[in-house]
Length: 257
Image (tube, rainbow, N blue to C red; front, side, top):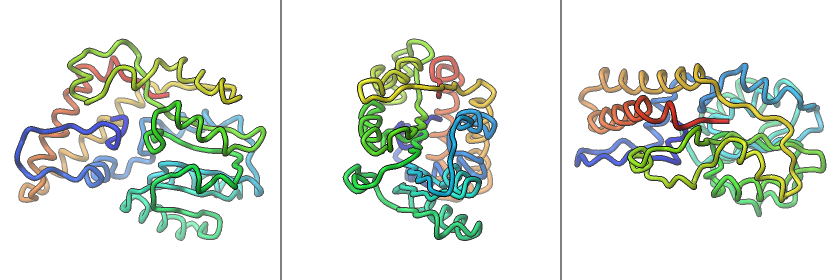
């Protein structure tokens, strides 16, 4: 699942529908990252960075802020995380306090607005699976380019088409083909904003399968354990339809890089 915020399965059932934030929280469970990427993959993507105690990091759509907090802890940096999801941000704040990072991590439960951060310049901006917090991937890159220090870096995690998606898959996702680009085309979007793509990585099929499989298993387990929950039926319909669509189309058509 690329993002439960970007794509929403619209059930025809008249039963109570599971709130998408609750659906996402249950599905992600104890997954280390709320995106189809492993720790090894993330470390590879960040391996060329040189962060230090004076570095300032912005994470847009930070979720539980796991990536941000890890970077702050490992490099002694300062960071700001922005996400409107109350459950995720409650977890992020608790984790920051547990790690003793409360003074170096500012976590904002709100929507992202470029204007709020216009007076600050960042060494690193993270936006992993969350460009929709700004708009399109192109609009996100444009916004972030103006917030970077000279020599700063943007780590963008974005979905892409591995091949032309079938129309019934687009209909299921409720999106148009032009909303995502091929992987290499996404990497070129920064050129007009004086950004060069200095490294790129595509999520492996093993990472995708592990993410999707765990996400689905968590939701099926929730339904089995809570049959009386008023949202259990819609939860089952939603994840069953999503997982079947992933196996039928998504596994071949949709990538993340």
